[in-house]
Amino acid sequence: MGINIYDISRTQFVNITLPTSNSTTVSTGTSAYIPAGAIITGVKVHSGDAVTVSQLSNLTFNIYVGTQVIGSNNNVVSAKMVQTVPSALGLASTAGILVPSGGNIILHLGSGTSVTGGIAADADIYVDYLYCNDRDDA
Image (cartoon, rainbow, N blue to C red; front, side, top):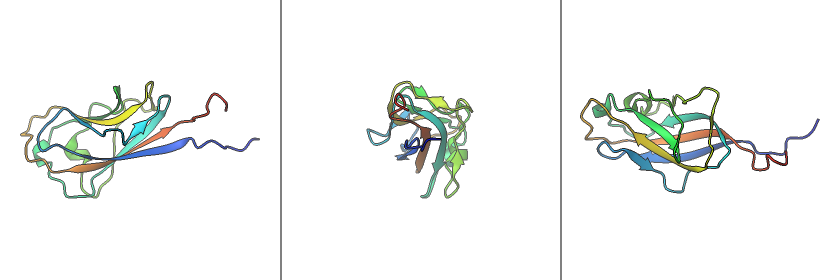
């Protein structure tokens, strides 16, 4: 039996501020990179500050890594971005999401049936993933 010398389980963190009105994407810049070959196992969303998203009762959102869709299509802002209550983002596949090309975490806002102005919220996004930098040597 060998010793596991590989740091495989990892978490990437980013804080994303929602725009004051509905927008299609919010980029994290280069601060939240997930490498190619990673397998995303979970995403947690937490809003520690005051949240004003009542206008967004039906607004959907999703997390992407580059162009790779991470979440399912049924994540609603007002249900997932709740002050002091962490929420799990439903993934597109319960088995995990393979990231074929590395990229930054991006928040995509969808459409909603409510007025989408007067938004005041930010969310801490934690993306759990498996990655072995030396997988070809393992």
